[in-house]
Image (cartoon, rainbow, N blue to C red; front, top):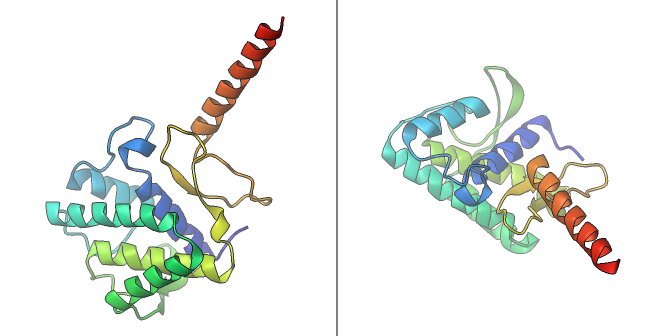
Length: 187
């Protein structure tokens, strides 16, 4: 399952941002401790527009990060309500825009809007497509009990269970050891 390219990118960005919390990182530390780390993250993600590069902007983005994590767990109707609030508060006005390496895609706020507002609106617009496609079940949390990662399952049969290969391999090893231990006990 794939959405429009800009929706796929926005969902991937939302996941990447949400997974910078210590409970979802391989290192176990917050990957956005300061404005410089945020700027590096945004550069790596190809996010464009206005950047203030200060502590206030970082605090706002960290708040949006938690909001994304909360939205990921909502059922359809409450999620729709939240998205509508986000779009209304931002006074979103969807427009087709072309810039940098991107062909025509949708922006609903100015590139000069505060970073946190732009992130909220980009994620909200992506979630609109997920809901309209009736694919909300593809927004998942990692099945590894010690991981708080989230992901979008774009697999054909919608069977992905883990946020990363690392978590999948770790859980496969746990299952293997449990099977091996059970076989050893049976002898």
